[in-house]
Length: 496
Image (cartoon, rainbow, N blue to C red; front, side, top):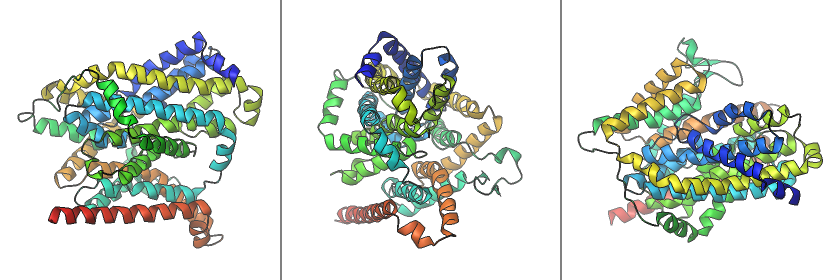
């Protein structure tokens, strides 16, 4: 471990790690360009590099891109990746209040804390957590997805029924295409372009970016800009102090992010949503969530980046990547002739520990660079709407096309944007629809696989007797009961 630390502090590791961080911020700040895409594009450049330095650059890009996803989510309510969905719930309202710099500094500091905790988990707890991750099968992933869906009650606004309907519509959108388990064509209406389904990032851009563009165009005469920019001297220090005054939120979100990040297939989106839900549940003033609560940004970004380092645990210990970017990094290792698994942990422990420390250092770099550019990035909201709307539209089109280089994805994005725009005018919350789209690909396959397993035993045994499943079911019931009680309490206060 000491050799790994010394290697990570070497000039080569630090330089390429910083390059990765800068590239990651550039990639993540553009809607549609994801950490997975960035690491994949960077992968060929690492082939002739020393393995440790190549991993440091890839890790730096991964960590920084996970933070930079918060930039469009906060400034123009456009989460270009699933992990930034929960960040937009409070990040954009903060921007509209003239606190865009506060939102971005909170995101960068929280990302640093989450990354550090995830890297420490990677350093010290890889063997036991890798073994624990194997306890999660399809039933556990199903209940975990259902638990994440309970956040709908918190973001639905005045009508829980519309929130549930929005979530159901999102999950239906996620079923478009060929079934992953049976190969059945669903909701394709004879269009071959729909057989591949709706790409997740394309759907999110359509659900969030396009309605925002339409709203900007509609209100261009009433609102010259989408928000205000108020330069506050010492905003970074003041924001960090505010976050540190509530350490429980930081600790809880970090642990949730690291714990869920270890699970292959769950990743940052589920971690961010669950963490946001828990922060809202335990807050003394939960009514401010969704209206510009710094705690909401902190919870989402801490968990999001906490899962970045933790996703390396199953990848290096078992050879099973915990996230899509981890799969790309797995490819980088294999290109170098290294095969992840127990043998790599023993034979090249200096490389593994150096990589873990590089991720930790990348988190610090991300905070420094992110805080330095936060003020300048926040000025984006001062661009006149008649200029900003076409810029966001152009970036959205480019982002949607870049995923699969498919023009039909652009049409799907525009169609979803129009539908969601009209639904929002009817009182539906776009966050609930986006939540369904994100969790649909997790919940549905897990449910179908669990049912297949249950056919050889019983549904009760598969769904209701496994220890982890029981624990998740209890959390689901508590979450629903808490949400119902809170809503009733708010209504009684309003009536009095």
